[in-house]
Length: 315
Ligand code: MN
Image 1 (spheres, rainbow, N blue to C red):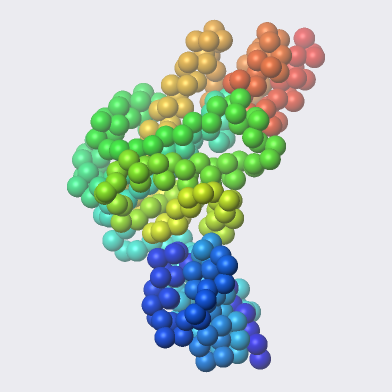
Image 2 (cartoon, rainbow, N blue to C red):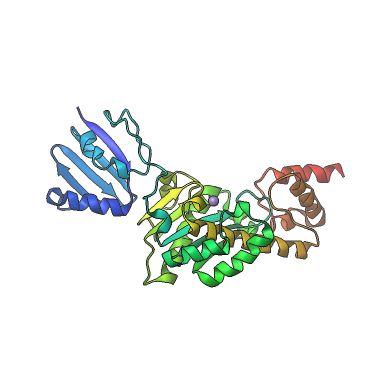
């Protein structure tokens, strides 16, 4: 019986596979593939996207050798005998002490303000310094503390921030959903940071997970430079490496500074979040300058826009 098993692997793992199947490689790798090999009635095709296809009568057996590297949960029907779950969301044991780039975003859930992605490089020797500084999950810190820490962090480690203003966000949003935008931004920030720190290289890269790895790789598939080597995703990433916590604090501090700047420009306190306070402030901005003013400060596709418009009509 012919079988097909699909695994999503890092390009580093794919290199391992390539070496393993060295003697069975097809001479010419088809387009978009890293390699193609044929072994005992099974064809193995590895794509640049990280997707690896096992096809043929021993596909499940062959794929099983690599299943523990899989970034996606496997369909148990396809892998027949396997009962073990793929280690999605798991990291190597020594991960917290590695020199890594951590990447996180801020502003995604706030009606007012930009979307900010920040990637930060934390070398092993700086981990303790950051811990002593008080760097931790930004949700556990006050705004004032975040702003103080950000100054200290910025002096200590290399990082790369990318800011998408609401105006830009509103232009792009109809075609790129928020996750698509985030994926492209994380990839870009990491890429720029890798260039900044060269010739140093991180041992790993960790993105605070906001979508499945599969979707992430799909979103960045048209990017010129796709960072996939040693890349990991995990939710609550700041709990697994302080680089994510540092990136998050830097991004949050920038976000707060921009909201303060908006408040000065508009002469009214601009809130974070997407609650009723945001509706009320948006209504005031609409009264003053309509949508053409509001679009400079708020993410218009949020439901807050309609609520604010309704408030204006009532007046
Ligand atoms: Mn996050």
